[in-house]
Amino acid sequence: MQVISDITAVILAGGLGTRLQPVVPDKPKVLVEVLGRPFLVYLLDQLVSLGLHKVVLCTGYKGDKVQECFGGAYRSLRLLYSREDEPLGTGGALRLALPCFSSDTILVMNGDSYIDADLGTYLDWFFQKDREVSF
Image (cartoon, rainbow, N blue to C red; front, side, top):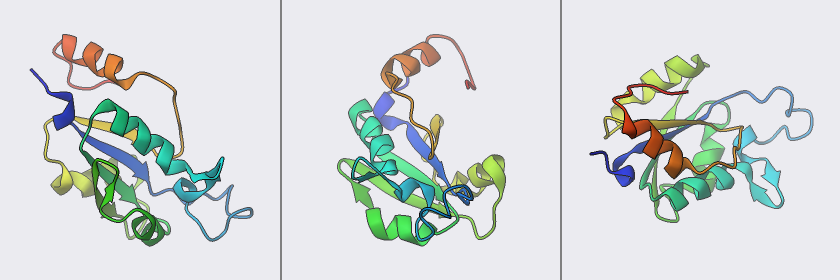
């Protein structure tokens, strides 16, 4: 039986943010403030409430700023970074990050989207059957 806390979460945070660059040219999308907090905080808080312990941040554009802002931990989460030197797309970002994964199951999230969903219920559903992938 899969233990939720053993799952590695992955947040795709390497986009160029071309539509936001005219408004916030000095920040990657995940650091743009929403209600006074970097957007990434909302995703990380979701993962904390789920009981996860490890998150891999797949960064690219201005990824150094993300690492400077969060460092190696956020609340109870250990943060690891996988940095693209050039845009690799979703599959390329995940492949580059493979050495950071310590679990057979990973939960992949987009760094520029927030869904107010109970991820625990989703993971319960996922593990009820012998699923290998879900979108």
